Image (tube, rainbow, N blue to C red; front, side, top):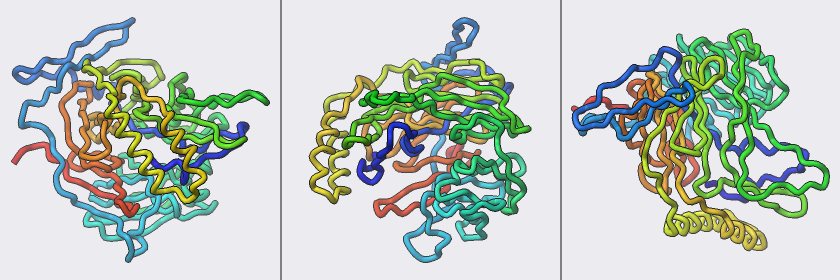
Length: 432
C-alpha cells in the first residue's frame, strides 16, 4: 500500500478520478486452438474435471499436476538495469513497462521522460529513443507512456494514454508509424496485443453524480468495458459489465475524496493472448475466458478452500498501514483523521485468490496468489494453455512482473531507497 498523503486524490465530483487509483493486473490467455488438450495426470495426482454449464465448459482443478521435484524454479539475475546515481540512462523513474527482444536486448519504457531505453543482455546502455512532445515517436507528457510490448519479429508497440496513440517502432528503435483508435471518446487503458496484432483496450464507467447527490463512500467497484480493435483500428467487439478492482473511498474535507486500496480487496485482472481475453475479478477462484467475438468460452477454476481473514491478519495489516503513514506524514494535524480512517477500514471474511497474473510466451498463465503478509517470497500458480493447474513457482518479494519468456522472468523492483531496477531472472524448467 502506498501512503495516502503523497497519492492524495482530491477532485470535483464532476471530474473522473485519476487512473492511478485503479489497480489493474495483467492476465494471460491462450488463443483459439492454442489449448493443450487433456494432460495426463502424474501418478497419485487427481486430474482436472471438465463440467458443462449452459454450454460453457468449466475446468475444475483440485490439485497441481507437477510431480514432486519437477517444479519450475527461478534462478540467478542475468540482467540488471538501474542504479542510485551514475549513468543517467540507468536512473529510472516510473519505468511502467519493459520487454525483452529475441537477442536479449531489454527495452524499458521510462514513462517520466517519455523514453524507450535500450540495454543489452548484460545491462549495458545502448540507446534512447522518444521523448515528451507532440512529434512522431514522442509521448504527450510525463506518464503518458503506459505500455511497451513486442510482437512477432521484435516489432515494438507502445501506448500513449494522453495522446490516445498507438506507436510502432522497429527492433532498433526506429519510429515506424502512429495511429489512433476509432472508438468511443473515453480514456483507454492498454490491455494487450492479440496474435493478429489487433488490440485490447478497456475503459472505466464512472457513475455520474447529480448536483447535491452525496458521493459514494466505503468499498466501491465500478463497471468496466473491454474493447477489441482490429488491425484496421476500428472497433471489432466489446465485453461489458465487468467489475473493476475494489477501492476504498472516504470524504476528505468539504469537497474532496481520498481513495486507497482496501484491505484484502478484490482485484480485477485482464489480458490477452492468441485470440482470447482472460478476466479474473477476484469474486471466486475463477478465470473467465472470452473468444474472438467477445463471447464467454470457458471457465478455469481451482476447487480450494478459501483462506479466511483472521483477527491477526487484520491487526498486522493495520499496523503496517499506520507505520507507513507515520513515516510519510509532515503535518501533525492530518494524522488523527488518517489514523481514524485506517481504523475504520472494513475487512472481508476471505482473502481473494489472486493479486497479479501474467501470460508467458508459451501461453501458460501465471497467477500470483494473494499475499497475507507483506514480507517474504511470493507464490505463483501456473496453468497450462488448456487451463490445467501445473504447480507453483516461488518469485522474489517485491518483483512486479512485466513479462515471462520460455526461460526468463522480467520485472521491476524498488528498494527501500525507492530506487527502481529492471531485473531479468533465469527461469529453470529442468533440475540439474
